[in-house]
Image (cartoon, rainbow, N blue to C red):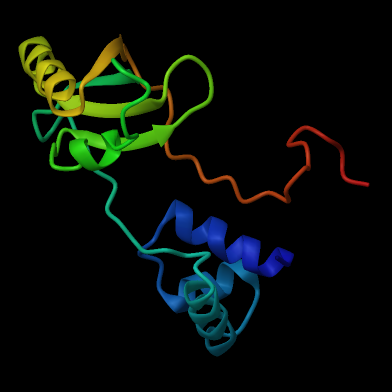
Length: 157
């Protein structure tokens, strides 16, 4: 991907509500050229969609946790993501390497709600859980649109 497209993706990742005019100014192209490039990036699947950034505390979902899951019987079908998809408290499900099979990012109201959710996860997917509660979030959802393999601290050559 060329630098101009990366600049467009970075600008939209930081503010998905940018107008084509503002975006064109930021990347140094005409409005029509930016519009074409954005459309191509969407068609190629580089830009998968646009979403609002949510303040979970304002929604009453002040407890965030990572829940590692592992099947009780590894010989059974690996269908935990499908079994857990109905639980709206699970924001993300990652397949991971290591001892655990999946890592879930969950958001709930309080410790009691987390305890209930863990029971639901265990029974719905027939898994064991290991939970890490998030104390604070210095940053999240940072866009990473640098060149693959480049070091962010490497001097420009």
